[in-house]
Image 1 (cartoon, rainbow, N blue to C red):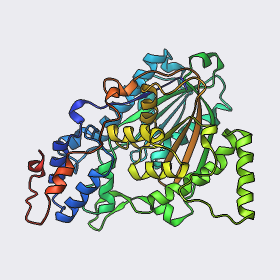
Image 2 (image 1 turned 60 degrees about the vertical axis):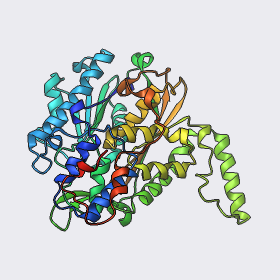
Image 3 (image 1 turned 90 degrees about the horizontal axis):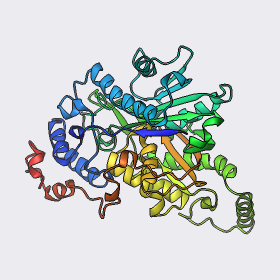
Image 4 (image 1 turned 45 degrees about the vertical axis):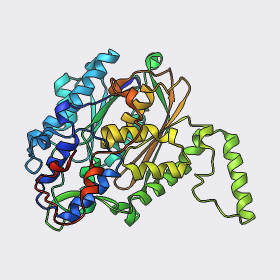
Length: 430
């Protein structure tokens, strides 16, 4: 990987508490119970007060988004990040051999990769791929796709563009399982430049050493845990149900069974196998919340967990027996930028880099989870000390904050009965 660039939206797209209150108040389908649920979930979500939303939602048009709103949102993210990639690396658009976009909920014609090819006047023999419907783990899928393509395309350059279209997917209904997406998902994205040209290895930041993809869509609970559907009123939305953390834990466990033996020292693998069979023979119970039993940190230095939500981060941390230091990058990425879908992993990586955690020789495990249900993980080796503040510039010194509390906790405390007038939720903010 030569470089990666995350997108930070304009300041007028920031979803501060008052903007959030105005949007909530515009939804006339909500009653007292829905308000309480929204506020309670927001307070405990791990989301901060400086995330970003699409322009049409800021303008009050969340229920009437146009095709141009979606295209404009994608152009802002993709062109901004790709511009920066070319400027930082010195690679020319005409040198790009492979381009992949990962946007689950928007698939226009011409495609998003075609828009980028047209803007930068890329070569005629470029191989373009548009991955849709792959969810939050799509970026890792794209990385694995490029890895496979590099086997037959020597000395090539590839760009992966990972983001999500949010402008026409704000849910204006009252189904609680669908309202969660409004709380968690935010505008953002990232573009990544990769190569298998060894002449560029001295300029590379990281090297991909392993990638494993797991799909448990044959399991009905996992398949239905994260689903695009209509509610009882016929309103489109994205349903996140109570089985989601369980599905994530199951997919992660299955994935790591394949991945960890490939990246951990042989001595650690042998130690675990001896311990496992000894306990099995002696019928010793497996301790709860003890992680996978393997010492993962014997082969992994940093954990880049998908910032999909507080429950997902906590579940991954518990499954791997990670501490607060390990999970801090994911929690801070969620707090500052929200769940930016397939682009989220790179904000986590950016936090690690901005905090100067990444040193030459370190190994990073990227953990991504997505609808389907999928777990796609990869391991990177850091090739040089990484110290760019990237998208965290001008704010990294503020993190982690002393508290992750937000203003809506005060509103929630003031709600006691149905006599409260919710015509303007903004009035309840301090």
